[in-house]
Image (tube, helix red, strand yellow):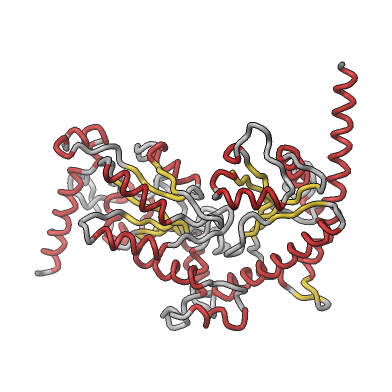
Length: 459
């Protein structure tokens, strides 16, 4: 078949599909035309740790936030495969179509890597029964770590132990992480954010589809801007842009419609200078993993010191897998989770941006997040409460409790610099936090005393 015939056949196919898509018909009309199937409301499946942007997307496309069905996670916040299978089969038996499953390659809050390989295997099993689902991988945070797996010639290492050899990347990757990353090639689409671990300007984002032609379904023509290859909207257009230009004009495919090309150019130039392989960009992001391993050891030392001196109890609720580490410290005698969260917020005030203070006056800056205990298995909930010396509140289930934690994104590869035979920046942070915890405990006690006095005066 000649090239122009192939292109015409492809166009005819896409035009026919376009006529029947829910995006064109609207969900109401789409289901009205298919009464014989008696289909229920379609859903997406995703772990409870999925990024909030997925909820936004469900609203935008009209599927509804309530139709994002969340999957349980295990003790380290990985998607639980048994629950995924259970939810899928239950929905299937109720004739509710599962449009797709989302796996996360490095959660934004804890950096955890979902078992993408196991999701892929589950889909292969379903295909034998003529069932299927779309697989999207959210690699916005962890996608750039794939550079560690790639050799200079573009091929992938097939042995995780060889990558770990020498400790250049800390303990990364574990065999499970290796298999998860390797399986991403089976996904239908992937999102990656160069503005995160790519160290590029904010707003640099990428959507990568297995089949480039699927982008046609997202395209919105505007002849006065991009021209049109549909014919139906191109009358009066004297010139048409070439296919090459059409394919490179990303304004057609994104919600904003108009976006600057400078960010895309920045990504391109950066990776020409620092190719995405182990000896290029992988060296930079790899150092952050080693820094995280050392930092984890330092937090353990901080825990031992604070508990030995009976200053505070420390817990790392989720074991770090990439380069994000979260921990929390509870004043030694406190048993109330609400008081702990208030204490953590007081600590955080000293570590976060304050527009009334010059930036140079901050010693260290970290972020914080909230961990709802209900997403953890019961055994893990009990472990966290026990390590922190917290008692369950009367009449309150674990599922009602949330924990405010200090979140550390260790993106700076030079945090691991050794000066005078010590990890200078990390050691300085530990010294600072020892002092800050003591100061905040004193401040907290004074606040409590003042509150009690005010209540007594009112009485």
